[in-house]
Length: 217
Ligand SMILES: N[C@@H](CCC(=O)N[C@@H](CS)C(=O)NCC(=O)O)C(=O)O
Image (cartoon, rainbow, N blue to C red):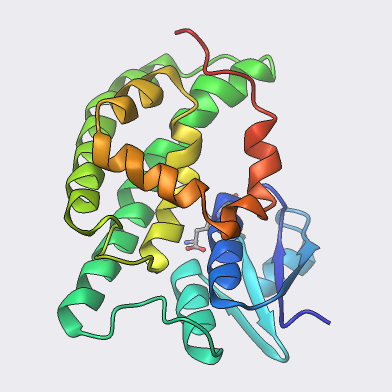
């Protein structure tokens, strides 16, 4: 029996971040698929989001709380800095991902790659307005990674796992591929993340690898 259960749809990027955190911590997990906004889903998460963690009779929704719980409730490598300043830096990065990166980078990939591949029209206005925000985000990620190799210091923390799926898929858009090629520290961070066993054995990897080459424009 797995240590924990994630209730989620399989393709959720927040699920992938939480799975990676569990893997890095050495915690085994099982996925129980949810139907979006079903009564079962809304009973677990009143806002209809995912994933939800179940550990015995403990149920937790909201990814920051889930990540923190996995790191605190189980033995294994610490995934948060112990000192106040380091922890604040890590939390700031998680907040940046939740508030700014996820709504822009994640949707940018959907607009530029996923929607056209499903035969839907891209929201050109969103794409145009996103570019300056993406330039700023990549530049901040590059500067952070230049310091210690990871977002919040010299080793992987929860923050890296929050960012990773967003950045990985962003790199499959023409604009993302160009921006990352011009941000050497962010590029090395991404290479570091994709060489970890927690990615190699992740369900995110086959989804990513089945994407074709980066579209030309
Ligand atoms: N605040 C939530 C956000 C999670 C979230 O947005 N998950 C996405 C999947 S990656 C979702 O639930 N999407 C369904 C929807 O928005 O209807 C958390 O931190 O867990």
